[in-house]
Length: 112
Image (cartoon, rainbow, N blue to C red; front, side, top):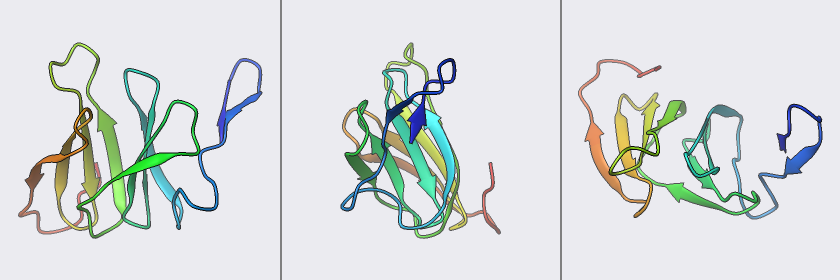
């Protein structure tokens, strides 16, 4: 769920029976245009629409997601950057929703 912190009112539900994480959510970031990206213990990295309940999965990670971040609106190419227990850091293009880079070679999980 997402809530308005000033009023305490629920603003959107970020899952339904067909979409969402199957395990605990471990990290969350917000895009410059109001969408949300969540990473989970289920190795899923999900981009949620501004209204929630529908999402796109960024595919590639094979281990739990430990950290996620988004570049600012001033960036010429908005990115989602994620780190994982699969020992990789991945960069995804927010517009095309495709993986651009995969940094591998770490000897252990990447935690942040």
